[in-house]
Length: 328
Image (cartoon, rainbow, N blue to C red; front, side, top):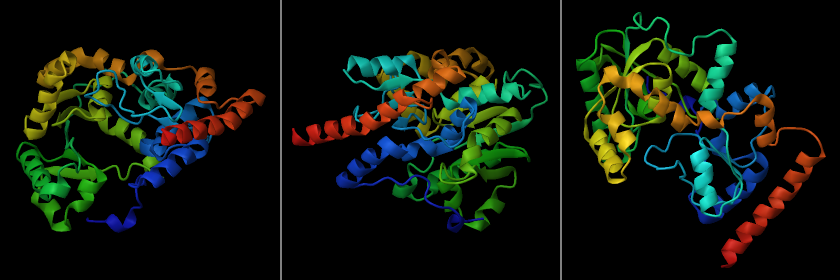
């Protein structure tokens, strides 16, 4: 079951300043490596009726739960596509240009699936759902420092509180870190992974497969406010928080930042999860979702001389900004 040899590196990023500069410059033409994670770019392409168009610049790929406005970027060097109007406005207040809110790819996926006849409201067959989905929300953040002890403790707790048929969804590095004999220690759990985040034909279908898992799930048990929480809430899945050290840390930070809505969510009982659907849609950027033609225009996927001219000047402008910053 331990199969790291069949995976390639999910997202390659340099740890050296020169390498980071090169990758940022390359992102002007070919897009940031982060654009490909979870199949986000594939979803946007499909919604726009296109195929394999690159996103020039960078695309927000997850929910920065502890950012008041969702702005977690450190600079304005690249054209940036974020989820929320609030994030775009926060960038503008800093004097940053080139930030555009478009909504989360998950919302576009729901539109695609709804057009294909799938129930994306989460209202059908709620009573028929039986599966509990356990998620180790801090995936791999502690493993390098403390071995896999926290992960094993998580699995032990999940197995003890589960009945046969419940599922534990692990980040691929956590999954690959487990020796094959460990899986038999948790007979009540189906332990699975969706694989690496990018650079794989499986990663392109990441969000689709996650949708189908959530459709059969009545309740998620999770210890950290990950993006999966927002996705689950849109499909009327209950959230039960595992109040371990990761939960304590996340809740404490939310309180210190004055994020009352997040505090309320993390302290809510599972049966009140439906009250937070609007919270989920807000943080996914529902007000920023574009029509097909609007999305193509915003991402520069239209045709004509204007788009060609735009991407001819964009690399020159970005290179000038990089040189100017380095010269300061």
